[in-house]
Image (cartoon, rainbow, N blue to C red; front, side, top):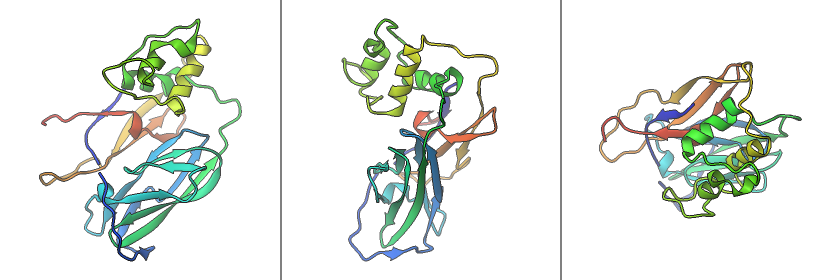
Length: 226
């Protein structure tokens, strides 16, 4: 399953005094709840006019040991705990509450739900069962050997860990009753853009067990008219 879609992001800093909790920003999602380390969620920010200002925001985690956030608003869990993400746009600032719980005990990496999106997204499928860490799939994607696509799977990332665990387990293909992706939702589903403007999309995958998950980082974006 490959998540294929379209869009982009950047960074601006303001030194003016902040209006905390102002109504001038609409943040999606307003509350973030994740399970286990390495899980990711994309933040999207709109102003009162409904314009996407994500690319012009500054993001800061109040506890970098619990959760990290990139300059583009991508939140990545590190360990269980609670904290806040500070979102600043010009003179406006708001917080996003973040709660990271422990991963479900005994949870396993599955091919349909976890591996297939990663393998399809990052391309290289060469594996070495006798020595999983030496698989080209991991060595190329993590930048350990030359690769035209650059470093895509950091060794301390969740995707790298999932692929390594899957190879060590013998590359199981799963069973018919394994949880599968049913559909994906793109937020926003429709957008009007002025020249040289940017919009941050979020991609949610819905699964056969009724759960959903942010998979923006695993989505491949392409334009039908570039």
